[in-house]
Length: 306
Image 1 (cartoon, rainbow, N blue to C red):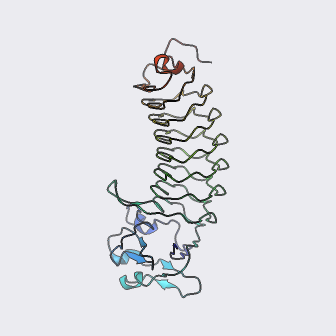
Image 2 (image 1 turned 30 degrees about the vertical axis):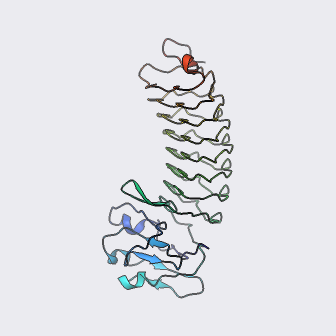
Image 3 (image 1 turned 135 degrees about the vertical axis):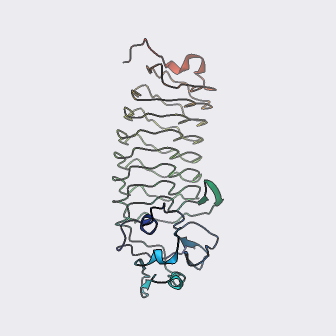
């Protein structure tokens, strides 16, 4: 069973605060199965490591770990890090966390996947009301738990949030995504995902590129989405083999590129009726679709947009 430290983060505003003091990006908070060498890790009995990339042990001073039923372990010296709690279920106070980037995803280093693991625990009780970024949060995990009750109303970036989470297929339609600007690669390679998303407020989105690439089962209505601020939809449905939904209500007024948008989406056959400026990159947007010969109803000037 998955076991991890119970972290009281009341003393920090972000999960990444230790690294941010140094102007560095916080990565590897939970997710390396291989042991990370002390003093930079607290290792659970399962061998799962909690790690931060910092320059020296003294960068951890002032941060406390608290185990329920056990005394507080201050990280005032390097040796204290190795004494953090080892047998407590993962119940975190996340009420002040603003950054959950990479929090549960596979172990990545220099854009290369070095470790993947089968995280699939219930985190539905997490308070995410102050989180602003969830980049790569569940990337390449076996995660498939209900998180539809999460408050994501402050999140602005969901890039690659579920990328490669090939078991994930949970309802997300109740999420308030009205502040999200990027869903780049959000559900890429989510080969099991096929949930309704038609209630999402996408009015702040600018980047939807790669969003459903290789989401091979996805085929849900999206025609109600407001895409008026989107600048890129490149490869959005690339090789989403089953997708075949009307998108004729979309107005891509600010789009700069739609290249490869439906490439390889072999069932797609819709009359989009879009009118796009000449400078919009449409390179192979409809290659290997059933409406390739007609560009799926997309025109350039002169044309009359509805």
